[in-house]
Image 1 (tube, rainbow, N blue to C red):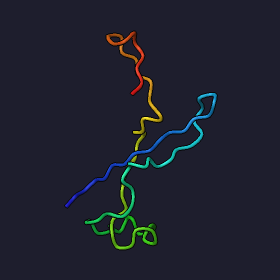
Image 2: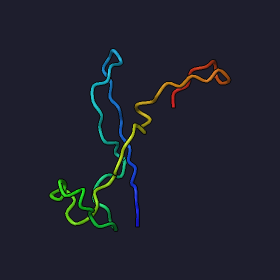
Image 3: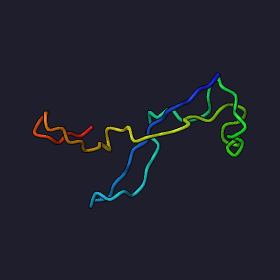
Length: 82
C-alpha cells in the first residue's frame, strides 16, 4: 500500500514580520503510525519511531495562528487572511 501522510506546522514571525522559525502544529498528527511499518528510507529515525512509519511525510503551514495574506479583487476589499 502506498500512503502519504500530511501534517501541519505554524510559521512564527518576529515583530517586523520576518520569519523566525517553524514549529509543529499541536494538531498536526506527528509521530509513529499506528498501522504502517517503517520503510527503509526512514532508518535514520528508527530510534524515534521504532518499527512503525514516522508521520507526517510532509508538513505545511496550516495553523490559524500564522495566516497567509491572499489578494482577491472580488472579495472584502481585496486582502484576506487564510
